[in-house]
Structure formats: structure tokens, C-alpha cells
Image (cartoon, rainbow, N blue to C red; front, side):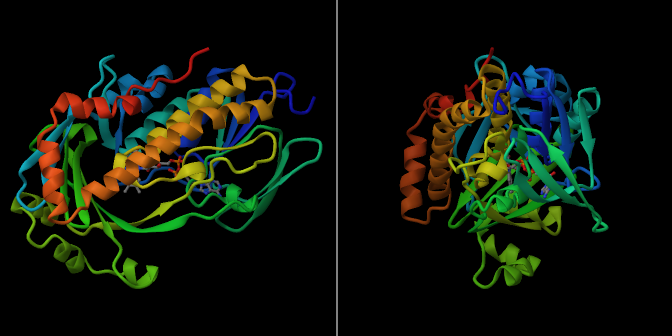
Length: 394
Ligand SMILES: Cc1cc2nc3c(=O)[nH]c(=O)nc-3n(C[C@H](O)[C@H](O)[C@H](O)COP(=O)(O)OP(=O)(O)OC[C@H]3O[C@@H](n4cnc5c(N)ncnc54)[C@H](O)[C@@H]3O)c2cc1C
């Protein structure tokens, strides 16, 4: 009965304490599991960057009792405004608020991490060990896994972990590497991230579209600051050369763009550069009792602001599967059945945004005309399947 969930020790191991790993641990602990999280970093938190969290993700966090805390640090958006990068003219307004009142929040990534971490620390069933970078994983024939870790000083340890082991170790997943799964792929795009120490004058999320380039701005830090992200093709040359691209080259990409946006970019100072990767390991054959969630399973480009949201959804769906099924194989089948079609549809939307956001004239004129002909309500209906999703209930 090694694969029977009810006969298991009700101990789960989560590798990685990012958004996926922390949410997973909370979902499992609420179902009575004892969870150990093993995280490579000695300190948690990625300073500076922001995140949009749509209602589909926030329904999961609301179920964990975290929504009030998130509302305090985030800013609720009613719509995304699409603008011409060149003129700043409004092209369309896409409402993002939902009928059940679940908000669409923009917030600092560290604020989300802090809210999740506080909940993890308050949960007696969860233990978190930092400075534990997974370097090896091997399945045992009788069930469970031998895991090998190294800390920052290079000291190695190994532990036996009964199933389930849940990999939430991001796009460069060491668990995926240990299993020989495909590596992440460079997308040829780079994100430039900036933080402005000033509020955004307009409410909601603003996006400027241009040839081979778009920029998004949204309020974070309870509205005190503004996160600005621009996404563009990586310049020719090697990855190392692209990473040395000087700030002036970044400014040149925006030549001819509207002055209000350019002034913001200049006030924000030097941007942080972030080459964008893609990974799709959904559907790969995994040993029984091992699961991949979040970016370790399906890192996607941020054109629909859904990577973290999908990680959060994964956690709720997998916890539900482990509750409702009898074996780890069954839980895996259920997870794949529920997640694969949805992730495929989200990826299609990402590809669509990638195509239309970066169009050059004259195709961009056609896009602008098509957007002008759509009412906000009809644009909202296009995304109802995405934002109206709710986690499975018992
Ligand atoms: C520019 C940009 C903008 C984005 N904007 C949005 C947005 O607005 N909305 C949205 O929903 N998504 C957005 N995303 C996507 C989102 O950031 C990711 O999908 C999300 O962070 C994935 O969470 P994760 O927990 O799976 O992985 P990660 O956040 O990468 O966490 C992985 C964790 O595992 C740890 N780890 C790694 N290796 C090991 C190891 N060997 N052993 C132990 N621990 C390990 C890491 O230290 C980390 O703590 C954006 C992404 C980018 C690049």
C-alpha cells in the first residue's frame, strides 16, 4: 500500500519557498498534513519587483484567510488601460474587477511573500528550513525519495522524504534536472524592471503598446510607489552581452514614445534586467508521489500576468487532489486533467498578447481600430474564463 494516501505518514516535503511552495504548504497544512519546506536561499524575499494578482489566484488566498492582509499592502485595480506607446492615447479599457467582489490587486512581491510567510510561521504543522539547496533526488523502490542538499558554505546533507515530495523550485528546477526533464528555454525577450518612489497618477494598471516593445505600470506598496516593467526582444549577441546592455541602450528603445512615460522611466533610474524564460514540463512522466508545481512545471512569459496566479491555483488543485483521491497516481492524474487544459489556454492567451502588444504599423493600426470597436464589457467577457476560476471545494 505504499502508494495509498490514507496509509501515508501525512508528511509532505515541499522544495522551494516561493509563491508556489508557501501556498502549497499552507493548503496542505489546512488539510492536516505536516509539511517541511526546504529552501535554497538563506534569506527570503526578492526586493523591488511588483506583481499583479488576479481574482482567480486571490480566491485561493482568500480561502486561506489572507485576503484582508493582502488588501492592506496591495492596491485594488478596476481595469487595465491599454495605450499607444507613441502618443499615450487610450486604446481600450479592460475591466478586471469580478462580480463576486474578489479584487484584482497589484502589490510588491515581497509583501506577498511576507503575508504568506507570516501564515506559514503561524502554522504549527509547517517547518521551514532555509539555506538548503536541493542538488539531488532519487526515488526508493519501496516508496519515498532520497534528497541531497548543499548549503551556501558547500556542506552537504541528505535526507529521506516519504511521498509526497512537491517541487516548487522555480524555472531552473533542480528537481526537474535530477529527473532529466527538459531545461528551461530562453524566450529571446527581456524584461526591464523599475521602481518609482511616487504614486501612479491614474488608478488601475496602465499598459503602453509599441513596436517590439510594451511597458506596464501599476501601483504597489499600498499605492505609495509605482512598479514599471518593459518587455522587449533581447538585443543580438550572447546572453552575457545582452546582460551588459547599458542603460542608454534601454532609453534608445523608447525613442519617440510619449513624454509622460519617458519622464517616468527617467525618474525611475537604472532598470534591472531580467531575461525571460519559458519551461513546459506538464505531462512529463514523474515517479509516483512526486509533483511539480508553479514555474518548475510551467514557467510562462508575463504577457498575461498569470505565472504566480497559476502557481497559486496549482497548489489549491493539488491539495484538493491529495484530499479526494486514494493513491498518488490518481492524485497526479487528477492534477494533470484539471491543470493541463487550463494552462494550455493561458499559454494561448500569453501568445496572443505577445503578438498583438508588439505589432508594428500598419498592423498595429488594425489592432487599435479593433480595440476601439470593443466595449469594456465585451473585453471583460473575453477574460471571464480566466478571472472567474474558483478553487475546487470538498
Ligand atoms: C518580469 C516578470 C513579471 C511578472 N509579473 C507577474 C504578474 O504580474 N503576475 C503573476 O501572476 N505572475 C507574474 N510573473 C510570474 C511569476 O513571477 C512567477 O510565475 C512566480 O514567481 C512563480 O513562483 P514559483 O514559486 O513557482 O517560483 P519562484 O518564485 O522562482 O520560487 C522558487 C523558489 O524555490 C527556491 N529554489 C530554487 N532552487 C532551489 C533548490 N535547488 N533547492 C531549494 N529551493 C530552491 C528559490 O530560491 C525560490 O524561493 C512575472 C514574471 C516576470 C519575470
